[in-house]
Length: 438
Ligand code: EPU
Image (tube, rainbow, N blue to C red; front, side, top):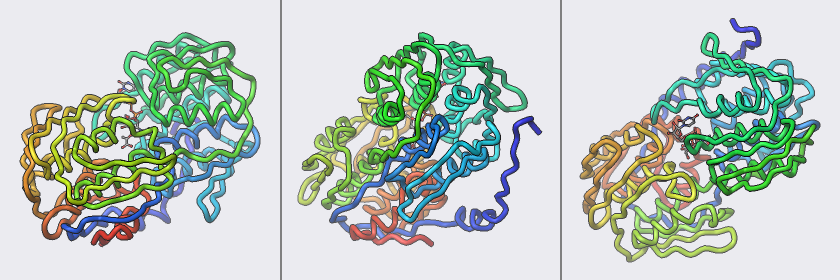
C-alpha cells in the first residue's frame, strides 16, 4: 500500500450500488414534450470548484450544486483526505481544509471518476506534495493526462509514476510558460489551480476556453487569485501566497440544457429551460436552428419550439469551445436519425465516442459508421427496443431516441445517466414523458 493511501470504507454502499447498477429506464415513446424545466448547476463546473476548495484557507461554500453521482464521488474523495464537509438540504456544500490529513487520491475512487485528477494541481500547489492514482482509459477513449503532468513539471514539480500512482512534489511551484500541445479542459483547470499559488507568473497557452474553465477562473479570482485571459487561449496567472474560502454559485449546466432542448426537438414539442446560460451554448443553438427549431433566448432562459415544424438533418463536427461540444454529439445523432435528409457527424475530440450508434441501429436507425464519422440517413420512425448505455452522453442519446420511438424502450446501465443528469426521470415526467426507473 502506498505511503499516503487511505482506506475508504464503502461497504454500507455496496448493496445500494449493486441495485443501482441493475436499474433501467422504461420509456414509452411518441409523446411530444412540453413545459418548463429548471436547469441544474453544471457537473463539469462543480467538480473543479470542489477541487479548488483544497486551495482555500477557511470555509468555502459552493451553491447550485447538482445532485449527481460524480459530485458525491468528489465529496468522498475530499472526505477521505480529511477535509471537513457538510451538505445542507439545498445541496450547498461547505468545506474546510484545516482538518486535511493526507494528500492521496486512491485508485478506488479515481477509477470510478477520472475528474478526480483535478485534485492534483491544488494539492501540489498548496501542500507541496500529492499522490493521485493515474486514471486509466475509459469507454470513450484512452484519455491520457500527460499534459497535466508536463505542465506541473514545467512549474518545477518532481513527478514520478509508481505503482499506478502519480507522485508530485515541489517546495513551491514556480511560474512558467506552458504551451499545451492539445486543448484540454481538465488539463487547463489543473494547471490553472496549480499556477494560482505558484511563485511568479504563469502563461497557459493553447488553453481550453470552455465556460467551465471561465467559471473556475471567476471563483479563483474571488478567492484572491490574479488571473487574466480566462475564456481566451492564453491565460496569465500571477501567483499569490494564499487564497481564501468564499461563497460561490455554480454555472448552469449547458449540456443538460442542450439535452432538454433536444428532447423538445426530437419529440416535436416545446420546452423552456429556466436558470440556463444561453451565452454558453452558441454553437448548439445555431445547430438547433439549422435543424428547423424555433429558438428564443432571454438572459437566463432558452425556449425551443418544434411544434408543427419538420426536423432537418444537420452536419456536426465536434470541436473545443466555442465549437460544437463533443458532449452534445450523441444527442444530435439521435435527432438526425428522425430528421429529413442526411446528416454527417464527425467526432474529433474522443477516439471512441460512437458507441451509441450500434444501439440506435437496434431501434431501426439508418447509420453508416466509418471511423470517427457517422452518416445518418433520417427515417420516419424508430422502434422501441432494449438498449444499453455505454457512457453518460450515450445514455442521454438513447433516452431521447426512446422518447421519440414507437413503443417501449428499455435503457440499461443508467448509472451512467446518474453521473451527470439530476433527477432526469422526474424532470422529463414533468414535461409529459412516460419514463419510469425500474
Ligand atoms: N488529452 C491528451 N492529453 C492530456 C489531456 C487530454 O492527449 O493530458 C486529449 C484527450 O485524450 C482528448 C482531448 O485531449 O482527446 C480532449 O480531452 P480533455 O482533456 O479536454 O477532456 P477532459 O478534460 O478529460 C472534459 C469533460 C468531458 C468533456 C471533455 C471535452 C470534465 C470533468 N470532463 O474532459 O466531459 O467531454 O472535457 O469537452 O470536465 C462528460 O461530461 O460527459 C464528459 C466526458
